[in-house]
Image (cartoon, rainbow, N blue to C red):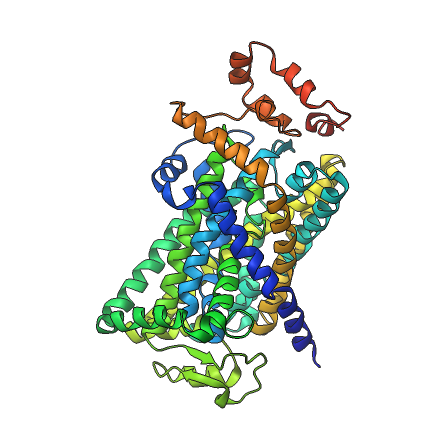
Length: 535
């Protein structure tokens, strides 16, 4: 058994039925907890997205939104959708969309928790799953173990391993459209990556606000061109996607079914909902109430849905996709293992022979409407998606490092952060020259481990999320234009930074100094965050 097979087997074990169930049905639970506001309050989400400003310590809601979208819209929205189609058929597209909408509730939960338990560190807000695991669990030792494990994954696996699919797919796209060697592509993009991440969260946020709107609108335009070119096939293609989503094999075949299980898996991988990727960025935002940022970042899932659908529809409507026989796990070069090999491009047979699924399918689909140019535009779009995601991955690594070494002086902590800034581009170059199947499996193993830890934490902290959500909505119902968070009023501990952020409003309501409230919250023998930050 070779290394690739071992890696893929580990991936299959981690992403087996239990994690699929925990993800999908955990998200459904949160839909009820927040009364489906993730899909019913789009007007409020948009209003929150376009309001608010940054500060010396935090970035604006819009900058945070773009940074979060940078996480979500990545190679998983192009290459990952193709992987889902190869193993689950066109019906996987349907389940990807449904899953993304449902899991936006989890996105709300984890991003609001990132805000609830954030702290001030190094002149900026820091937060993430490690903080809400450590401070939100009633069993402190268990929470501490979860926090350290997650922080290790965030600081090592994310910047060094999870960037693999981005690097591999960028290299693949440029080789397919421009004939550029992966060595050259990997080197150039690695240097550009270093230039952006060296500036920290503010440069990342500024870069994201420029590239995210541009890349999303551009991708939608090329999709429209492909749809217009194949207009007569639109009804049949939509019918195929829906019908194949509900066949016996798609829904219940195997353990759960190819279309459903791969749709859920790829949707979660593309959006990152439940992985704990985005709370660190969400925590960096300046706002008066954690729920507002949770709603803003739940809205970002809609962008993810649009890009996933664009990718899937371009491949299927142009017949540039392949589908393996259900249950086929390891491809060994036999074309007989396929139940469908696309005829939209001669390249599809070569893709089947090599067992490859990725951005090339979408490029060939775009080429059917706009020869050569279409594929080149997809390559550029993919580079934008993947590059923006990698800089967001860097920030997750930086935040994990900041948590692990939070008790060290800032100067010493920055040495570790600079280590990530230097090693990450090197690893990007390495992954650009590794096969796609291997890097996808490695990435999914890392994300799967993070998902297990984070989803369990989210289930444990349902009461906190519900309290904060209900408080926010109650204030809005009472006519408060900008609700504010008072953790003491809700009985939530270890949130001292909020007593300072909303000090004036808390004092006005309580009729006393906020410092006294902070000391009351720190009671019971627990050390307050404000004390931790002075060590």
